Length: 331
Image (tube, rainbow, N blue to C red; front, top):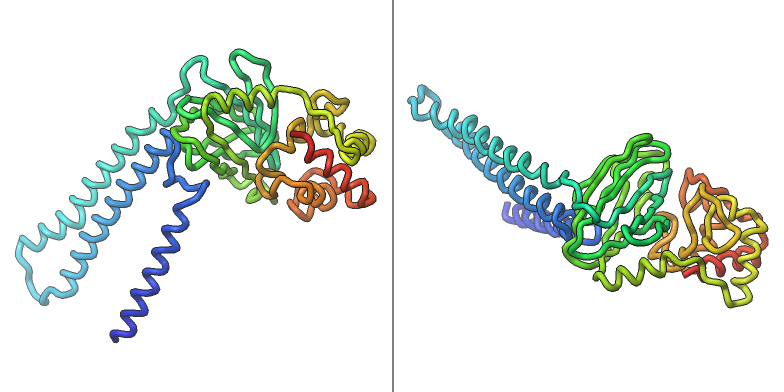
């Protein structure tokens, strides 16, 4: 009996540790880094505490009923069951519901005027990101977002195909993204760091492979990044990258992808002007290096099933390596 209890306690302890481990990391809603996420995490803790209290009371009443002697019971027993099993849970849940409803206006409030505005368009299965600074020309990138710390930002969200859902758990709540309709979401980051965002609405074959990274940094670093990102693509200097730039146009990559400052002006796929400086490839599923570029170009469908980009594995290995070197040099 003691061995069984010890094993049960050990198993429960291990499960608790694993559960806590799942609450950490760059995609954890409980590791809040924004005002919206702070409010949601606070609500979660209160809801969890309320659930524990209700569970303890109800289980206590159930144990009391199991151990009570058969026979008639007085009015006190009935009042105990009605009060503890009905009135108390109802009152507590009503209080928690009121607390949750009170948070909604703040979570859905728009960002102040003249806030940074970012347009995000969901595609199967990647994110198009357009910056519209109030005092500079707009520019575009994909699957990565940069935000200034301690400043509100307004996201304008829409979809190019099916319903998606935009969510950066550490910064705030999620917002559905619809075709033919613009939805708005205001976020206010409160600390710097790199956080992971996802599509939270099933949208097709590669739904689980549609993520992105949000980088929150200081104002000065953010301004420098915007200035670099708004510039045209750098001219490759190495021989292999120069050849890759030629092959990029020869093989028709520029028909789908835009590389500002070159003849590539496609609008179907992601903007690749500074793709070499991003944190990941393929919407958050690959590291950003030459080998990953090579793998993506040659075996696109294998890396992300259902993707609309054709694979170019039929090209000679030297051409593939040159294309990968060119893309990696676009910083």
